[in-house]
Image 1 (cartoon, helix red, strand yellow):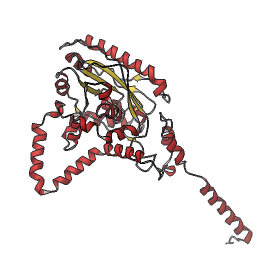
Image 2 (cartoon, helix red, strand yellow):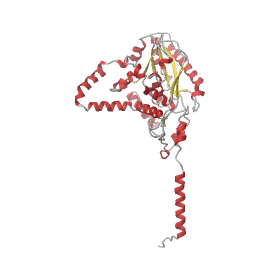
Image 3 (cartoon, helix red, strand yellow):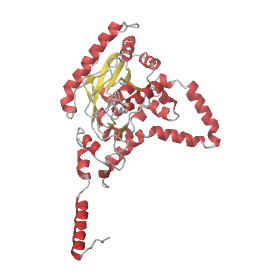
Image 4 (cartoon, helix red, strand yellow):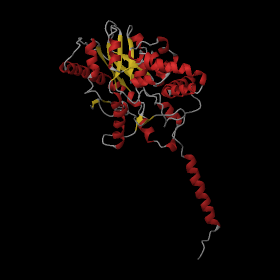
Amino acid sequence: MEGRVFNSSSRIFSASALREKLTDLTTSPLRPVVALHASIELSSCPYLEKIAKTSLAHCSFVPTKIPRKRRLQTLAVAVWSTVLIICISLFLYLCSIPPLWPFIAVYLVWMSWIDKSPVHGTRLSPWFRSLKIWRYFAEYYPASLLKECDLPPDRPYVFGYHPHGIIGMGAIATFATEATGFSTAFPGIRPHLLTLTNNFDVPVYREILMALGISSVSKRSCSNILKRGPGEAITIVVGGAAESLSARPGTADLTLRRRLGFIKVAIQHGADLVPVFSFGENDIYQQMPNEKGTTIYALQKRFQKMFGFTLPLFHGRGLMNYNLGLLPYRCRIVSVIGRPIRIRKCEKPSLEEVTRVQTKYIEELTRIWNTYKDEFAKTRKRELSIID
């Protein structure tokens, strides 16, 4: 078999070709971090699609020189995003210390059978809601509220928050803290953001929620808070787990048509209904494709039916990179608090009355969208849609 002969010229050519290839690799830069860092300051998030299409090989890392304030903002969001895991880990660690077992047993008994604060909303702490960490939390996006009119504290209120988003960060910043100035904008009104009752079964975590004024979303809880009278307010993220599956940047697909329970509660207690639309809530995370008919969607709906909540497959950015992680993207969130719908109290409202109020509610919510969409939703892919 005749072997292949290499001469000096072929060796020279091979070395030159290899040098050219190496030069091409070194001169093909990764996506400029500075450009991405500058785009974070935009009021909307047009770069999210580019981030989603960027491969891990082109991961954009956080530059070393970042202002201290921005680092604190990221830290505040990271702490809140992992607070549930932190609380569970802390509790398990305390359980590993035998001398603490009697105290832990007393706490669990008190938490499970004695303490009824989650359904009464009586543990709200103005001091805790005003801590500086919440200001950093809101400034991260940044999150703010836009007040359309005064709300006199001479009656109770039911705020309907839309859209749910993946986690509802705008609802937390607006109604569970004083970072956006809720009490300054609406003096005399005590807001209670409502969440799943299961959240109050987690030791330590439940104490944090209640200090923020967060209560159970059960019917009993709604009634207990509203019947205390003027100035009391509850905030319900109306779309719930079902709507979180539709949360994608540039969209506003609401689950609202068959949600009549919060309207009925408002009528039964004579509480004015206030629609709230949070522009940017759907933009802070990317969600994996899960259209109706897919296996992922079927599994998510089955999980929701079994446990009362679902798990969207989502991603955001990381602590050290801008492409992949569980932290939300820095996208502006503006919660527009609309005009109240006056409600006449009726303990047993008919379906026709509930439907009539719902129609007015949807009209007001649509008006908010049409009024501010060109200012706060410039990069929208489609218009507001009520899908269910």
